[in-house]
Length: 112
Length: 116
Image (tube, rainbow over all chains, first blue to last red; front, side, top):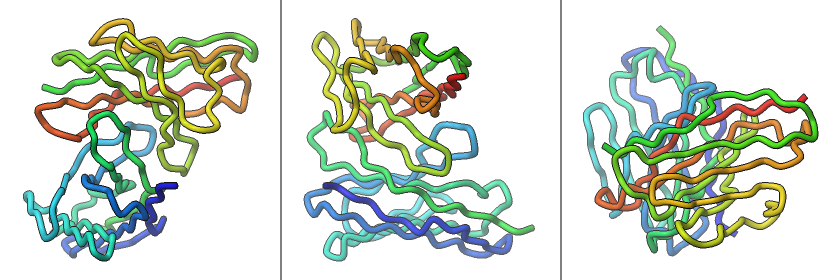
């Protein structure tokens, strides 16, 4: 059974600091990895996608993937109070027609 | 692009009644849509994969006779919760893949179902 593990938090980070969110997955054949942000009562919003080992940067966000360790992370630089949300890690095995497997999410709190 | 519209946003119903939730891809064709359910402080759980023109594929433990899925066109999938009970109260979210952007899922706004 595919599993995606995240620390549920809450993770509290001062405004302006770097927030580091981590995720591990069990299915070695996983090929696509995503980070979604979800505000309370809202549906998830795609933040980052990453498909190959290494780092991928987009603005204040950097996703890191290490397939050998089955580990994916998200760094948020210059954290803002508006970044406070639950961050969901999601994994796909590829093939085009399968849904994503989500972790339970990490609740991030940015303290002003 | 890649907008997925879902409605209603919330619905309150009496136990034993049926509720239909609609999911539309507004600016692209989605041969496959996915239905997720999320309980408070829990992750999204995939319920079923909706395939245009064919039967839905349900995840283990999801009752196909209770959660009816119809994907009659390339832009519309519906989920009907039949004979709803209080334990069916949850946040239901549909999603679709926009193929030019690979494996990324785009989500509808979700439907909060409360069964009294």
